[in-house]
Image (cartoon, rainbow, N blue to C red):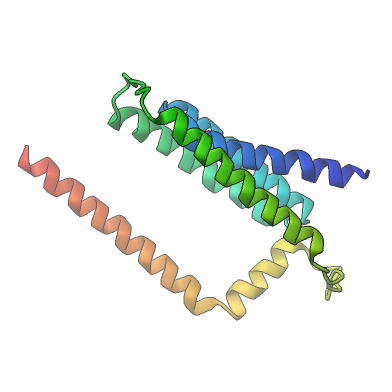
Amino acid sequence: MSGSFAAFFILSLLTIGGAVFMISFTRVVHMVISLGVTFLSIAGLFILLEAEFVAVSQVLVYSGAISILMLFGIMLTKHDAIEDGGSRGVNRIVGFLIVAVFFAICFWAIQRTTWPGPAPISQPDVSNAKQIGMEVFTKYVIPFELVSVLLLVALVGAIIMAKKEGDNE
């Protein structure tokens, strides 16, 4: 068992565990913290894939997003979480069984699949960030600019909507 396999196994468990806890917790703060664990674990998986730039981007973008999500989640929700005991236990058992069957099918399919070998690296002397930059600004310039315009329009729309709400009060 190699170190990279052990790291992959641990990060995979953290990713899946964080996602499962995120949907099963009832308090917003716990949900956001488990979402943060999931995103950090995914960044670790990117590092194992030697995509350091994507991993750093994941941490920078989603750490900011998670802090904002936590602020809005705490401000906009009720904090007196009342547990309803009715059919919640039955739903958990059925949900667990569905997830277990899905996991077994996926595990069986992954074990039966023959995977091709790794692709050869075309430019070993070029860094990962430089390769991403070359791809984005040569092949994908138009989609990149369209996304930036879309984000700008969303920002302006949010400001206009917030100003209209503030004027009504």
